[in-house]
Figure: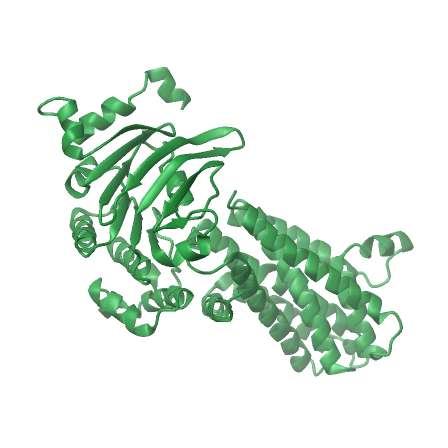
Length: 243
Length: 233
């Protein structure tokens, strides 16, 4: 469902993504982990057609990420790491606007508002909704077009435990219904619970790629995914300060 | 270009703009100033100031309304969400352009209505206001696309707005300044408006002003689409 072949991104000489290759199978929940500045967001931006790779190729839902953007866009949904909504408009107006971009009617908008438990706040300006509600609205927006692949960039960041659990349950439900999920998160426990397979990226390069279970096994009997992550991405003190 | 997507962007921007205090103050300021000036001058002098006020209104509204909304979308990364939808770069620019033109033409008409200033060839006047609004909205959007943040967009837009007002607020500059004004697009807006209001569409050299505005509009629009596309690289 997702194929990345030697993807590379440079910004004015700075190497953000260094020839990475991986594959995500249909219906898989795929974790893409890495420290801040590792190249996760650049990779997502390339896979969703927002950025043109410096070199390498990629396919998402069968479409080339550079040459078939017009076909790619209706097949994917993206939940960004920031809550990028129109705060002055109502929750319904936000969804209606994006629905019109996808050619989706009001019925689908109301269906998603109901599914996300937002129907009773649908006419409130987004600025007045709680962070958890806004996150649910972001997921609703990404689902407007029934995407084959859903990209989730830090979907539970900054949420209280109750809202985070609610979002995780929604992600599991979506995946059960056949949606391929590409997830980035800083919460290792979340990645461990949700993901079928994981890639760990550091300084633009893939440093590990396996199931959470196999990754933990490689680092000892009682190792957690966090131990594995820290071991694989740790840097010397000076190096860390320079980075 | 997708007409449904363009009209969706226009409709959403309109809803958003009437709830945005910055946008509302940008629209109301030139309208209020023009009314105050018209009331404060003798009846035979007031109409002579109309070309100035219409040009100032077009410059302020076109240069600030759509770019303010655009730079906000960019900074909040809502633009990223739009650009991963089926909306193309051209649809986004066209939707914003429509809003800028609509607001600038509406505000200019409001100035004319409130000051009882329907003088000369009105359809031609609206046509010139529209031509001016297209290019100036485009210039504002170009600034928004190229700037890193809302603050830098508004700083550059304010500087550009003031510069663009010079040909309107300095009616009889020295020759050297007059020559420099010819490099400023609003010079052709006020020239064309004055000719249409007080001389008529048969005015000689009106075609020079119109040609200059059309060329400016095309260059700026192409620049916007190119700059937005380049943002992906």
